[in-house]
Image 1 (cartoon, rainbow, N blue to C red):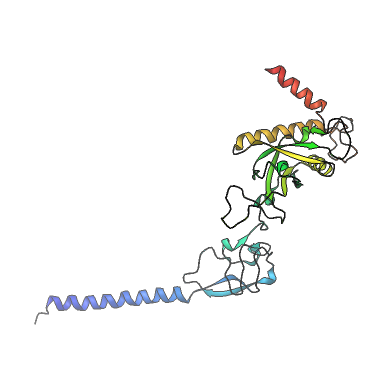
Image 2: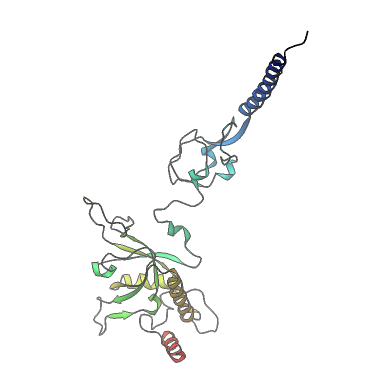
Length: 283
């Protein structure tokens, strides 16, 4: 008796389905039962806090649906900073940690070698460009000496011709963003201090003039990175000319104090004047 072809196909389909199901179940079972060692938070860590080895632990967890970029070694996490509040049991993902300290002003995390950040006080509205300065601006500083009876109290300072603004803050030390208008019920913040990128020589002068009168800021450049870089390079070149050989021995000194600053600091220097004459003669 011949078997019906449909019956044979039906039997083969059932057998094939059973084989596929058996293989699939085995694969899924291995995937879900697999484990991996990962780093997990053991103690609560607040945002901005440096994470230590004591805050972490290694645990075995199921590898199914586990993110590939989850931290697997404690040494990869210890020493970083929590970018958000971490709770016990949290896995460590890249976006949850930062390699550098958190700051309201990220520019302070990237001060170039040989430079410092220093703040000056805005004593009156006009001193700080009427609350219109922004981070990234290039400004020029003038000094008004109201502490002594000098004939010409206003001084142009060659060392402070081109200074980069890192941030502008209010009286509470909070950063101000004048590019965003305040809400209707929010009072406009007023500039109290300006933080500048400076060389140590410039910082020394700023400290002196901050306590010997009033500094006035004039805007030189905004929104033009190429021009800003050029102006800062010109300022660095002038500083190098003025301070490379303070004691006249023919070699750069590298160290300076209030006593060994050039005597004509605070007035157009001979070096700057000569540089100007040279540039004028080239045209």
